[in-house]
Length: 137
Image (cartoon, rainbow, N blue to C red):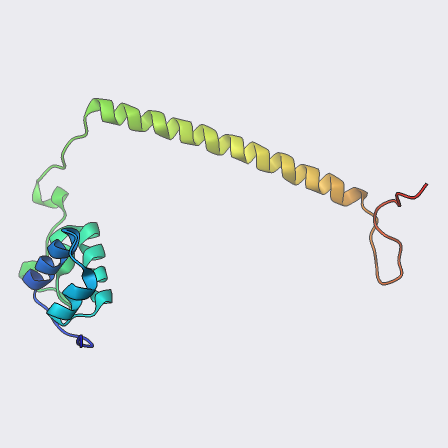
């Protein structure tokens, strides 16, 4: 039976996450380690978003364990190639044009709805005539 809650080392969490990412059955892994499945999934998500640093324990980190952002450490992020940057900018332009077209469509349909709403006769209660003309001749 899995534990309710516990404090696990970073190495244990990292090992479990690597086993999950390798394709091991999560239920069997949880039983083997005595951990809740939801904790395994939480560790995996933290690992995917923050890397191994996302697997730290609960509570406030020690001052020595605090990691400065790469800009503060002087490390530069890997530079994107010019081709990838140009492709990304082109895609951004396409998406911005698409958003503009959708905004035009929304404005058109809002205006059409206002016009149609203005032509309808109000019905104020039971027994009042319908809001559209009768199809009878």
